[in-house]
Image (tube, rainbow, N blue to C red; front, side, top):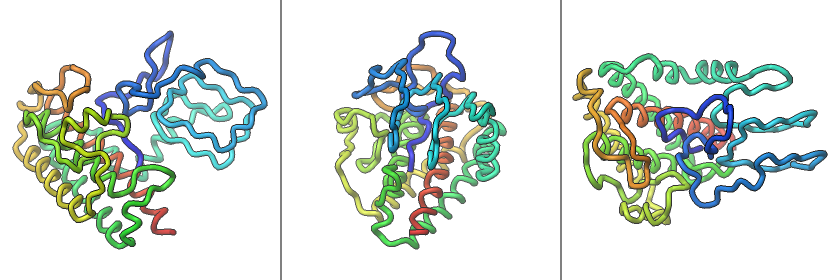
Length: 277
């Protein structure tokens, strides 16, 4: 299940000059391995079959007279033209049709809106978890196309709740569950400093218990929300290493919900593959 957008705003739609590269829409810095080796490169009559780009900034890329068959693209899309047709709006509209929770998420930011949105998220994930529970145990840790497994996705959402809800909104200094899973690029030393063992392989029942506990945290937060409190500034960053910037309660809760919605989309996509297998 692909890592989703752990940030508050999408990258810019256009670049008019040199700017810092966006290494995947969920990153806020390149981390180890970031490279400019191929910036401005040109491939002519090249055999690129099977090539894979992960967390790459492909802004301004041109494919001319290419042969694209069995191609899979996921990420932030804007001004993406295929054979002279900008497909960005079509892709967005089709995703909205398949996942109406995306539309609901954009409808507003009042306290009542957040409560209704969390109702939807709880319902969708209950359905997804029920589907996953009908699969063989090995399928829960199986990675489809090298993406996160269903179990890893739940662990990541535990971390997201700890970071953006418990630490940022509730102002808890060290709320991190040891089986939480940060973004794949988050430095291992920083994760260890949070008490997280990236090499851990917890049992699925333990993952479900941690996930249920963290979802209850968000439920308590949204239950007590008031419209006046949504603009309160949060004192702590989500985790060490995150940019120091102004964050409101509404913004932090929106990140949690955006992560929940996007990871649900990836999860049910991969569940369908596992079910068919």
